[in-house]
Image 1 (cartoon, rainbow, N blue to C red):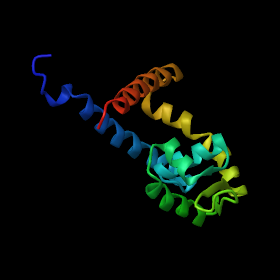
Image 2 (image 1 turned 45 degrees about the vertical axis):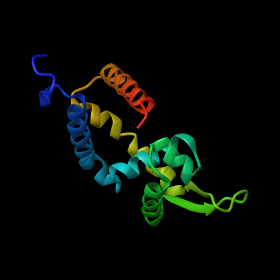
Image 3 (image 1 turned 45 degrees about the horizontal axis):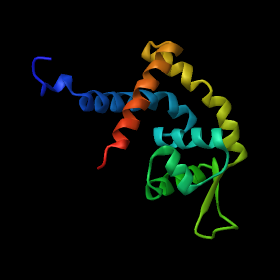
Image 4 (image 1 turned 90 degrees about the horizontal axis):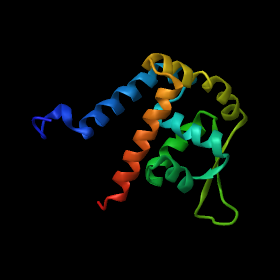
Length: 145
């Protein structure tokens, strides 16, 4: 590395550009499902884990509840989820899939192979990339702000 401050050498720059590019690539694939990328991520968490509180959903997505609430409201307006107050804690809102939200999962099964094809990646490439990204995430979160 000749110049430690060269833009192209910065991991933060590569991750920022990759993030914007990947999310933009998902747009065309998610549009027929009626989902934005953040909504797709929320649906993935709900398909995997079942009903979750807004707080737990935010933790899974690494988002603040204040960010998750409007996202969940839009999913509710699309009749994909329901929001109900927890019977054990009135301050907690539980998010659950509707029959339509559950049915959407079948259509969403086409998304991962479509994205692999768009990126020209194999499943092994995906696993290796994901492993590196999760190591970066863990390391970054371990550093005090």
